[in-house]
Length: 113
Length: 116
Image 1: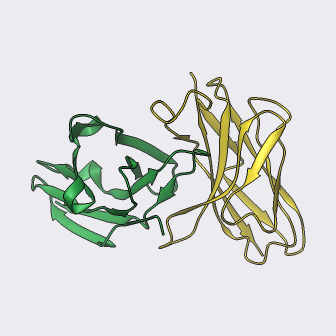
Image 2 (image 1 turned 135 degrees about the vertical axis):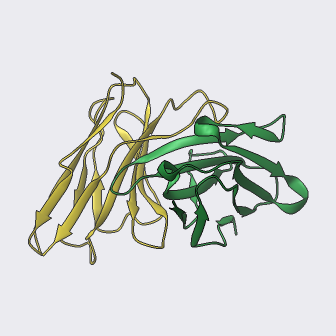
């Protein structure tokens, strides 16, 4: 079955520290991959996306993600976290056809000052 | 400013009542979507529409209905048949027919529905 997994439900990092949020997918080919961020009580904002080409993708707010086909992963990274990055982060993918996005269950990021 | 509007932000209803959530976009997008979000479950697709006067069921359509009479509007009705309607509802839109390479979904601010 096609699915996306975010293994970490909660992550806490100190402000200024680096961040990596994990995302693994299950699909027979290369899907289209996305990372979204959601502040409490708000909608989702697109951080970055990967369709093809360079496997290291740059996004907004200083985030980047790397697609690794061999590991079926699309991990999100940021070299130095700011307190305003505290939010919930969702990995998502779709495989074409009907434009249906499949979401992971999210990772809640807490930033300690 | 272009974007997606959902109203109201908070909605309270008594059990057994139907309720309609509004979603409007001025992005000139063909495709629109409704998702339901519950804690710890991510987002689940309720209905989607790729063009006016057409829509398809998503993964959890039971107890919900939609209409797409205008390109910019995609209202969702939560009926009394929905067994557990209390949730956060998100509307999204995308360009649509141009294909997946440009078909990124953009989200509205959401409506939190509480059924008492």
